[in-house]
Amino acid sequence: MRQENSLKRSAKAKRIILPFFLTHAGCMERCLFCDQEAMTGVPARVESSFDDLTARFSSYAQPPDEIGIYGGDILLMESSEIEKILAELKRWALKEIGRIPPVRVSASPRAITREKLFLLGRYNVRTVEVGAVSTDDAVLKRSRRGYDSLQSATSVKL
Image (cartoon, rainbow, N blue to C red):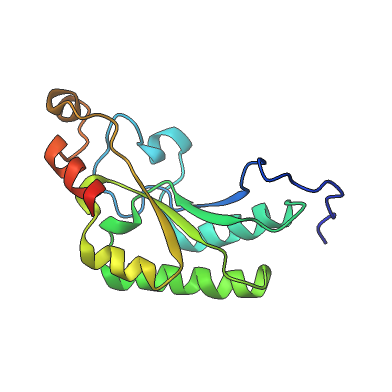
């Protein structure tokens, strides 16, 4: 049972984001910035991610404002796999939280397409964080990001 937080958040308080980690799921690159398996020693496994999410949620004093999908690139997965994960996340949220909070995902510019954005919209994904770490093509190439500055600009426009 979660403890109730007696403090009310002000309008300026930070939003509470419940992180849902899909360790390196979807992304085949091992770039300089996010080689999750090397950093954590944990291979990508969606099943254990839901166990971690439940444990993390039970430690919160109040329900989250959002759920954030991090640690991999869900948009680089096949659409059927994205839909499977988001549908399961929706079921989990209804059971544990009693509602479906907005979801945010972090995605590489190379993964963002109109079709994938449309799919995300059906599952209450309201924010796509574009993982563009630079607009310098030489830096992007050296850090093995797998996209260039043009792809970054295009994905932000979408």
